[in-house]
Image 1 (tube, rainbow, N blue to C red):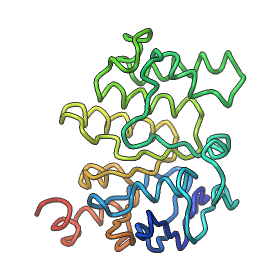
Image 2: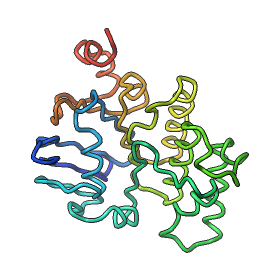
Image 3: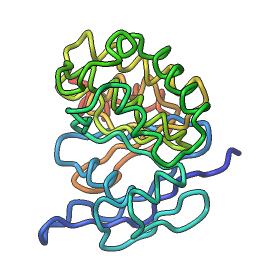
Image 4: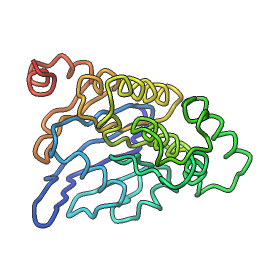
Length: 238
């Protein structure tokens, strides 16, 4: 069995006295694409923020590469290889595309390899190459999402966390983003994908987890879940 890279046990997180995550357990193994699906307000993004240290956890354990990481800062996690593309993208709007990618490699000092990785990102996202000197704030939402993903890849993640990468995008751009997620995964990057489009997320994934009201209510093989009547009724509109 592949090594478990990320393990979450009994995780609880609260916002202003309201418990948004009520004790969740899940894991991501090396070489997997795992999807965490659920409706708005289920606690998915809160879980991701707690994992990466941008939100404090009330209780529970988070392990990355076999070591506890709860309470450590997001900057430490990037150094360890746990990198998140946040909901809303968060690009540096007054910097160019190339400068945003360089910022993604801030933990590195191997200039020649950084240049190679920028070229690699441009090969994955040809649209970014065409606009390399353009300010990120002048790009479309879909282009900014590509940039946010490319910037994360510059850190050479061991696990890439993607939080709602298609939110607010056109159907055509959603298709492109899902294609890119699949391509990045095929290149050997382990991925945890949080996504409201349950059907597409489960089609891509090896395994899936369903989150409802701060709890994991179902888990298993993604293709089996895709055909589960409960999942289809609740998340696929059937």
